[in-house]
Length: 223
Image 1 (tube, rainbow, N blue to C red):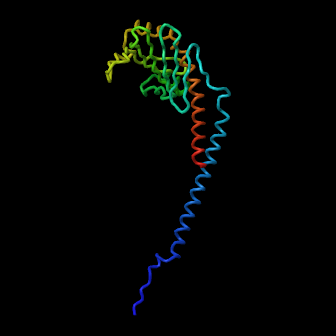
Image 2 (cartoon, rainbow, N blue to C red):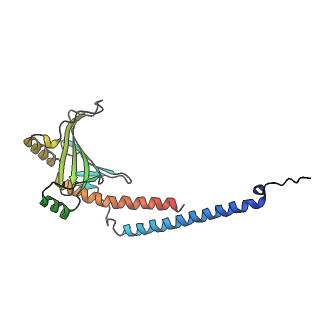
Image 3 (cartoon, rainbow, N blue to C red):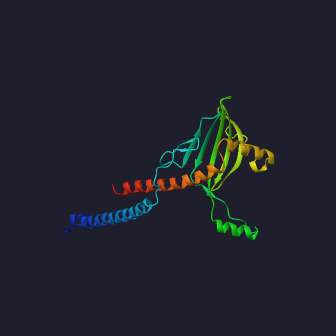
């Protein structure tokens, strides 16, 4: 009489290799977490030595500073003058391009000696009390020692225009007009000194944000 046997894979002993595999996978996961935690804690300990010794400033000259943890922008606001000035500044978001291969040799040497120049982008909004919905907006680049205007255009806050006309590039405007606009911004506190301050502020903010980010990753991994 033929004998019918259950396949061996359905018998109890077959579950042993699976349990062994799962246990091995669990050990690998724990080892990965341990190694990751060790690396994270080394990075946190190293970075802790370079964190700013004091809290980031909340004011610069007559500007108040709004800085929310975890965000890549800060806002500077001045509401004390006849005009309200608002400056939204990114963290470092670019660098000055290197001279072209065809550029004079002295320009290439200067660029190499100076090193990369990081850039901070600014959106500057100047608003008057009357008319209440009209503002003048500027797109600027803040370099370590100078501020450069890229665009200037009027806006209406209640306008429905999706892509308003922004005029010409600032560098293509008449020289006297550029000079007067630059002087106007300097009177609002938007000048080379602000650019220098923002570079120092963002260098410290970058360390603080990275330290906070590493702490958050560490907290997730160790749970």
